[in-house]
Length: 132
Image (tube, rainbow, N blue to C red; front, side, top):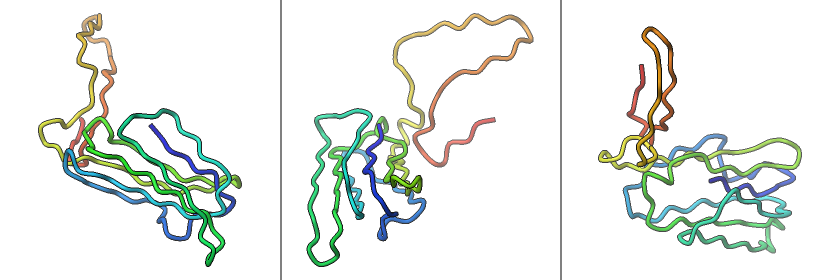
């Protein structure tokens, strides 16, 4: 799930990489400023809200994405990108030690043979998770 405002310049108040660690059920807000043209999302959920406005003083558009009641399933990158190819990224980690990886709760079987290499997909949802 990515929210990508299309900007002509990099947002001045949004660092290149930002990490955030809210606790489960907290509200998380992301603000992007720039010469906003439009908003594109790869998905939408009922707990998301998006507000856009125009700042008369700075002559920049502002976009504020609010994600209510975050869960470990919301972990991942959120991106503001420019038409020129530049972007700024915030990575949301939800601090939920009871759910350290995101996985599909359905049972899946993977057939492998002895000594065969296999990749089992899973996505860490906490920055402390290390894989070997």
